[in-house]
Structure formats: C-alpha cells, structure tokens
Length: 101
Length: 399
Image (cartoon, rainbow over all chains, first blue to last red):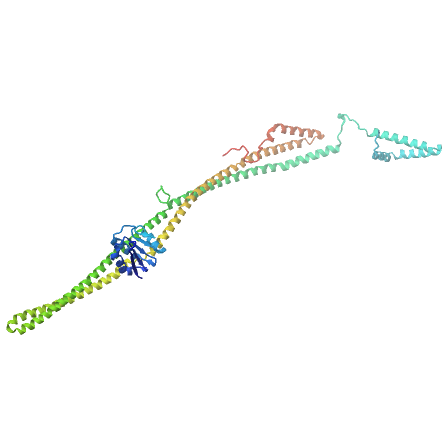
C-alpha cells in the first residue's frame, strides 16, 4: 500500500505507481508524488499495474492532481488498469479526462 | 336335311308306343313269313322316316292371327295381382318418404341458420379479441405517436439517467472532499509553524524572565539608587511570567484545534471514499434491462401484426364457411324435385288401382304406359335439375 514515483531524465516522463488499494490512506503520499519538483516533467503517467482496486477517493485524488498540474483532458495517462478499474473509469467518464490504457 | 333331334324322337316313341310295337311285330312277321331280314329292315326304315316327317310337321311354328290371341287366365290374374300389390306398396311406402324428405329439408334449414349465427358470432368475437389486444398494447406504449416505445423503455432510460447523475455526484463529492482535506493538511502544516513560533515566544519569555531576575539582583547590589530599577525589573518579571502563561494557553488551544482537524480529516476521508461497485452493478443491470425491453417492444410490434393477420384469416374462413352453408338451398331444390316425383308416383299408382277392375290386364298396362309417357313428356328438365353436386359449381344465390 505505497506510492512510488520515478522520473526518467531521458524522455522526461514522471511515472507514479500505486501499489495495493488506491484509497484515502494514500492521499498524502500521492499528493507528495505529484507535487514534487519533478512534476515539471513533460509527461505524467500513472502506472496501475499493481493497483488492486480503487474507490471514489482515488478519483478525487486524480482530479485534484490534474487541476494542480494544470493539465488538459487526455494529457495524463493511466496505464495497466485491470478490468474492474477500467469499468469504473468507463462509467465515470474518466476516459474523457485521462488517457486510459 | 332333317335334323335328328334325339329327345324329340324319344318323346315320339314314348307317346306313340303302340304304333312302334305294332311296327316291330310287323317286321318280325314279315321277316318270318317272307324269310327276309332285308324286308323287315326296309319296313322299319319307312316307319322311322314317316314318323320323323310327321314329327317335323308337328313342331313347325303355327302363325296365329292377332285377333285370335287369347291370354291364359293364369297370366292375366298373376299380372293383375302383381299390379295390385305394387299399387298397394306404393300407396303405403311413398307418402312416408315424402314426409321424410320434408323433414330432411327442415332439419337442414334449421341447422344452417344456427351455423350461420354461430359463425357470425365467432367472427365478431375474434375481432373483439384483436381490438382488446391492441388496447392492451396501447396501454403499454407511450403517448408519443412518433416512436413506438414501451412505457418501460422510457422508465429504464430515466433510471439510467438518474444513475449517471448519481455517479457524477459521487465524483464531485470526492473531488471537493479531497480538496478540503488537502486544505486541512495544509492547515496542519501551518500549525507546525505556529508551534515553532510559540516555542520561540516561550524562549523569549523565559529569557526575559531571566534578564529581569538578573536586573533585580543588580538593582539590589546598587542599593538605594537601584530601588526604582528593582521595581521595574520585578514588573518585567511578572510580565514575562504572564506572557509564558498566555503562551501555554495558546499552545493548548492550538493542540485542541489540531485534534479537531484530525477528526475532520477522518470524517471527510469517509465522505470521499465511496465504493463504486454499486454504481457499476446498477449500470450493467440497466443496460441489460434496456436491451431486453427493446426486444420485448419488437416482439410486441410483430405480435400485433401477426394477431391482425390471424384475425383477417378468421374472417376469410368464416366467409367461406357461410358460403358453404348454401348447400341447404341446393338440398331444398333437390328435395322439391324428389318430392314431386314421389307425388307423381303416388298419383300414378292411384290411377292404376281404379283400373284393376278391368278383366283384361292389357288395358291396365296400356293405361300405365300412358301415364308414364305423360310423366316423361311433362318433366323434360328432370334430368338436368340441380346437376351440380358441389357447392363450388352450383349456381346458388348468395345471401
């Protein structure tokens, strides 16, 4: 149940990984991840490979992140989602705000 | 040549046996007398040929003049008896037949009326049923005549819309909650700053207190000149103490605030964390229901068409049945024909009866022939009356 972030200098991509359940407990760590200096990167990617499930607090966090970074719809990518997470993004129309893969 | 008919010869011998015996005797006597077999054979042959000749003459047909023919009494009486019996039978059997024919006609007419009524009733009921079905379906449809949608489809669409709104609301609540929490965390951070400041203030207050103490000690050493200064120093010390006191209070309050913030943090955390599986479940259930409703709506449309089709084919069948019922008209015609023929028979046999007093049966027979001739002449159409045997080909009037 941790949040990790990694920045690769070569392609200017900031990757934030959420492991376990993406819920309210992750709030502080997640915020720290996207508020750090490296967030001036050209591209931000959220990797959900190890994310087992999400609830609405995760959705709130993602929206706040988008607002904080001043990103337009579709600029931030969310990758490696499992089926349940994908379904949630569908019914909440998050696929319009983020690039879901 | 004369044909020898052996049976006739035999009969002749049986009938004229005396002659033949005499002939044989003569043969024998002549044979003995004249001592010649040949003579007796010649005599025998002559008598055979002579009897054959006579036989032939006997059996040649006689030609009788017409006026002299006399019918034997036997034939006359038998024929008359036969005719009497025929007349009696006719008079006994035929009138009931006429009655039967009439009965047949009546029964069939009655049955046809009932059948006709029944079929019309059937047709009306079928139409009623179709109308009822249509009414039921109209109840289930929306009032909008442009699109044929079931009321349930609209309802499902509205529900789907409501669920969408619910999902949007959930997201907004989460979004704002997280915003609020971020502010709360910021406030927490501010409080850390405040605590640091308060510590510094406490340090100042303590230092001030110490300085004031030192000042008091110096003032005491200065003796009388330091008395005023000592008072001031004491005041400063007391102020420092009050300041420290106040500081503690502020510290306590800030701690309290921080605890409250922590509680708020937890509460808002709960608000922000709404499980999404209810929404997912509801949405997929609704999608399934909507599809099913579309199928049902389709089926309802098709069924209505089929029902209308069935109704018209019932009408057609009923019309055909009613047309087939016109057999009763045909039967009427047939029965009339049969009846009139029977009645003529009855009349004919009646006229025969009163002629049976005649001695000569030939008079009666001639009268019968005359009656029959009249019958044949007067009803030339009897052969072609109601020649049709099926309702399809008969020229029958439609009701």
